Image (cartoon, rainbow, N blue to C red):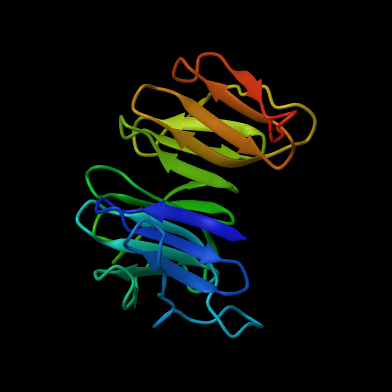
Length: 212
């Protein structure tokens, strides 16, 4: 299966094939190229494991691994380490880039940002983030367990969007569009969507099945 997915401004697709390698496609997924060159192998494996990709409008691509952030200026053909300030071999679980090129990196316990394409990172906040995205208004959305928070000031302050997740399920994915819709997936059968920019929420997916 594929553990992460990103698409750059030119339509190139980046993904990580579980227990295989990171790949890139420039023809809509018809063919794929291994882009693991220069990336370190995961502990105990003979291939890198990319937790997350993020793409900047200027063509830069970022890969978050168990030991830091790597940056590519040629669609993954080569990579350089870009994690000064993250604190050594840090597990990077999520990456996101806003329209100004500020990159946000979530580790197991902290959120960082970089305004120089990942050359240096500054601590923004603490907490175990499981998913991270930037919406069409450049607001950060981040999940902490069952909670979904939004920041309009690059992580200085946060607002709880009060997603009514039942039981002990935690948020695993966040997606937004330019109309204000927000969808969150959880590590359970439930997902939730908001059609009004996070004011109210509706469940979906509890009976998700192929209808044919």
